[in-house]
Image (cartoon, rainbow, N blue to C red; front, top):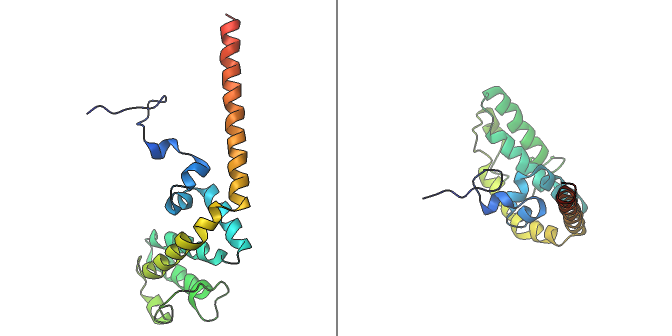
Length: 167
């Protein structure tokens, strides 16, 4: 089977061609993979007083990638104290957080927060994400992106036209 390549010679895929806000609308996962998407989503959640959800999710993602046991212990404690403890400064509202107590922080493992992270992800996916896609923050960014795209397309057409007439 032949591979279809785009104009740059890269394998073509619908996910690859979607950029920015277009990609964000396909899934929360795609939004969270894009640093600009995370920035805009955080901005939105801050206005909704639920930014701690995405901050917790991001902290868990970072935690899962850690290899060093000492760093994992420090990060696990930080996540617990920031998001899960009864005295947490940015407490997330998850079921089962009371079952996760400080004793397990001494023996951390990469997936120790997974169930809680999944709860927060689903909360964002089925609640905040759909509202975000209708928000002024998202729509303004989408319009700016489209204007930028149209502007660069117009410049490309103008360059082609000048090459044709200047030869």
